[in-house]
Length: 115
Image (tube, rainbow, N blue to C red; front, side, top):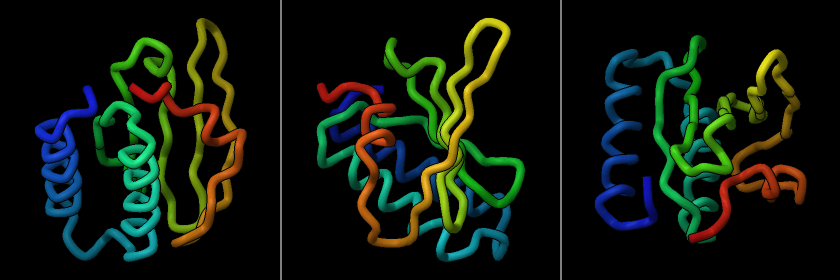
């Protein structure tokens, strides 16, 4: 996805659809952590992501951008699970986060480049 307004409207629609598919299961803290991440991505002029449901009542954030095709971020109530998928291995690490926290430099470096 790109950085244009229509793509960000699609992101918001996708979030609403994910939550609507499992009403009353998504904790407010999970939604706020997703909102924090999406606000940072949009403010820093990075490509709009795709939003999918996670296994738990979580969100999966993915991109079509070349440098982030192997990146997936799962949004939990108190952290993000950052996964990079490579041929034969997966690197996974956790970024602690609560509503309003800042993001570490390591976490920001994982995100696709600004447009």
